[in-house]
Image (cartoon, rainbow, N blue to C red; front, top):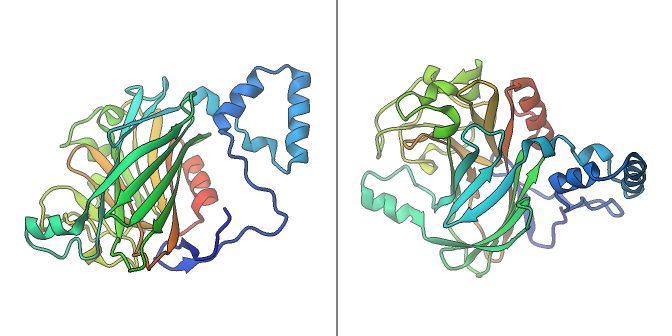
Length: 327
């Protein structure tokens, strides 16, 4: 990623870290790994060798064009704020994500009335800019509160779906925009309803892998139901206004296992504002923004993992994508 003047990369605790591409370093290919895998399958052995050599000359490791993407058969569709991820191998054959559900100001869990919560939510409108014919990538754009533009690059990768967001304050005044909320609906994936699906959902605490029904839970909040898990360094007044668990997540990762136990889905963002077990058979990894000064640009990254039930592999991919931030 190349950062222009005024752009910053947000760290997990809200710190801003400049990350510029080294002079002369190769740009990452924007071609979908899934599409590349399909291309490789159609070539003969000689064609494969030529393709690998060409990629090597371009400075790309052939392993990055992951042939394992094709068997997952992931495709993307977006309409009316719902991102649908299709796959013939996915339990239920699709996974729906309310993308995006909302953006919020600071102090979102501080209020004590519905009216105060309404004031915390920033109106937004999202539309589709471009989609690939093969369903491997989408580009969306949002306008939040009038002066914030958000560009979303969403693409299929070998282990799920990758999200790259660029947020830009088009105005000269600071904007109070603290966090955003994608909602991953897992009823068909887990095969369970609201009362019991938490027994198939997990996060990571100081105890390691922790199923959500084994976390410590509270009940008092502006809105009852669900459970919020707040990472270290995040102000609990700036999170989802539902009951907050005393358990502190050690990784920016929340997920669930499929009904048959063969697959898992998990979601991670950098930075994470809070993890949330929702009230509509859903899981959230709500991402942090932490405000925008006049004309400021920030970048946020997310990942939705879909793979066979292999926690070691999940954690290996998570570390490669986001770094290791806990035991």
